[in-house]
Each structure stands twice: as C-alpha cells, then as structure tokens.
Picture 1 (cartoon, rainbow, N blue to C red):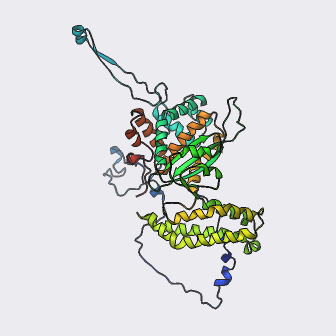
Picture 2 (tube, one colour):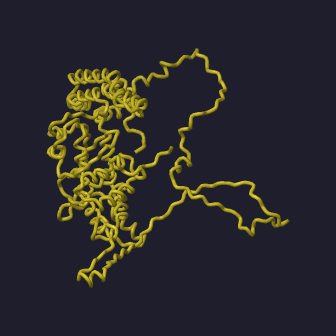
Picture 3 (cartoon, one colour):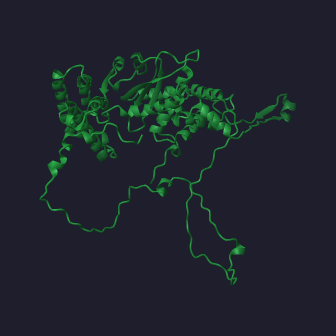
Length: 484
C-alpha cells in the first residue's frame, strides 16, 4: 500500500540522461562552508514513539517504598524523595470469550388478579441482538466480520482462533452468522446505494471472483464483483455489487437512475449505462506506454516514441500533485484546482491529443505502440472534462484502491462457497470500505451499527440515515483519532 509506484517517471525522462553534462561547470568555485545557528519554532514533522501513542489511554502506576521501608537503614532517619524517572510500556489486553446468561422475570399483581380477575403482568427485557435466535452477540458478530473482511482472515483460521480461546465455533456456524447478518442489514445497503445514486460523480471498476456451484465445484463461468464509488472529499460512498457476468447490463442495471459523470477504464461494457457522461482514466493510458518503455535500455529510450506519450502523462500527474500539495487543505480546493488545470494542464492535453493523432497515422497498428495509441485515441479527449470541474479526478485510482482490499482478501479465502456468500461479502465490504473512507474505526462502527439497527424500525428511513457509515450524525468516538 505504501510502497513505491511501479510506474516511475524520474528515471525515464529524456532530460535526465544528459543532466550532468548540461549543468556541469568545471570553472565554477566550490561553495564555502557557512555555519548557521537558529532557534526552531516550527514543530518537527517526524513522528516519535510518544507521538504514535498520544491517543491511547494512559494508566499511571507509581512505585513507592512501603511505609516501613521509608527510613535509613544506617541512622533510621526518614527518607525523602529526591527525584523520579518515568518509563512508558505499551500494554496489550488479550481478548476473551465468556457466556452472558440473561434471565428475565415476569411480575404480577395478585391484588388486581383477586379483584378484577385479571393480573397486571410486567416482564423485564433482555438486551436485543441482531440475530434474535442465535447465541452470537453483537460484539462477536462485529469481531468476526471485521476479521474476515477488514483483515482478510478466512473462517477456517477464525475457527482455530476461537478454539484457542475455548469456544468451538465451526466454519459453518461462522458462515451462517455472516450471511444472516448481511440479510438483516439489507435495508442499510439499499439506503447506501440510494445515497450513492444521488451523487453526480461515480467511479467504477470490476474484478473476478470464484464462486462454487451447487455441486461444490468451482463454476466454469467467470463471476464478477463490481465496485462503484463516489470519491467525494466529503462523505464518500463505496458499494460492491456481485454479478454473474461482466455484461454491460450489470452497470446499466445498478446505475439506473444515476445521471452524472461516470469514470472508468476503457471497458466498453460501461457504454450501456444511460444518461451519463463517461470520463476515462489517465492511469490506464499511462500504463500502456509504461509497458513499452519499461523494457527498453538507455539508448533505445532516447529515440522511443512511446516515451513521449508517457512523459505527457507524467507532466499531467506532476501538475495534479503540485495542485494537491498546494491547495488540498483549502475550502475552495476544487475551484483552485479547476483554475490551475485550465492554466497548466489544458495546453498539455491538447499537445497530447495532437501527438496521438500524428503518431497513429504512421505507426504499425499491431505493434505495442500502435496498440497503446489505438487505446488512447478514443479515451483521451474525455480528460477535457476535468478542466471544467475541479471535483473530478484525473484517474480511476480511487476506485482501484477501494477494490484492492477485496482482491487481497480473495488471495486468502480463495472463493465464495455460494451465491449467498458472494452477495453477503458485497454488502459487508460496502459497509467496511465506506467506513474506512470516512475515517471510522471499522470494528467500533460495525458494533455501533448492529447495536443501533437492532433497536430501530427497518422502515424508519430517517433513523437509518443517521447510522450509515458516511453519516454526519455518527458519534465522534467512532472516528480515528488524529495526532493533535
């Protein structure tokens, strides 16, 4: 996640090959050493150990001598404190399972029963849980879901994990809990989808998923997990949608009612979506040129026509980075980014389009460069949309980052055992990724959601809106604490 990008630009810039020759001057005097002292007023950006733990609860334990030890062993005079030392230790409290038995009592008024022949009966209530007929507490459900979908721990490992804690919970039991939870939370998922379709900008992506058929064997047909994301700076939404095909009917059906900008890669299936304006992804265009030049040696790079296309992409990304570094913390960031793009990016996009139009006339169509240009030509003009709307991103990387947790989890759990399992995964990944994108502590939020939903009428839309992972009404203690 935090590693270097595989599509590096610095080593492949033509100007870098003769940088030393261009800037060298053997007659120039070497600089003298000047000693400067100053007082630092700006806090350091380096994060120390204490800064990393600043948001944790601190328990202070003082180690003092007992009263009968506070006298000198030589002269019996009282000892006095002359100093202290402090040592911080990061402690861990192991999780544990225990059974909580709730016994409810019923009370009756015998006097009313004697006088009115009808007793006034009052019954106490046990706490409500999401799965009423199950032994699973809301806390345990949150933990199991968090382990599987946030930390990609498959159920067979969880079975072993709980066994070491003294509880024999089979994979079948855990799986049933997950699917039952997803079924209960369907109204939350549908409401989140409704909120997504109200936005005017959505990014989309898709990836394969293995699902077993009715006979327990891997299905011969490819199944797909689709992802739709509103990458707003304020309250983003991420939705997963499991489908049995990669047909364009899938995004067409899911995005029915949506009207706005749809940003994707070059897959033609998204063309079936109606009433939208398609925007394409610069990262996918850059990748086509990168795949060519990455295999070239230094001499071949100097004459590579593909490097020119790659460098246009690199220039546009540099502008995006500089605008983000300079203005991202300002309230009118999108307006400032739009203005900066019009001044700096627009000429480069026009040059890039001209380069593609000229090169494609002379290139061999089936060559790697020909394929890269053929991919780029129909997609590149859509980038002009970012010049008119500063909220639009230059690429689809935000959606790719959100689908990556599913791809990483897939490496661990390999497949879904049924269609219900895949649909449950889609729902729970949606809640977790939306929570993550809104800076929530995932397991804490899941518990809050399940607890709250257990005591809310599923038809009370106003109450449900308040507990969505992108809601502004969520308690502050659910949010990830940042260092002050």
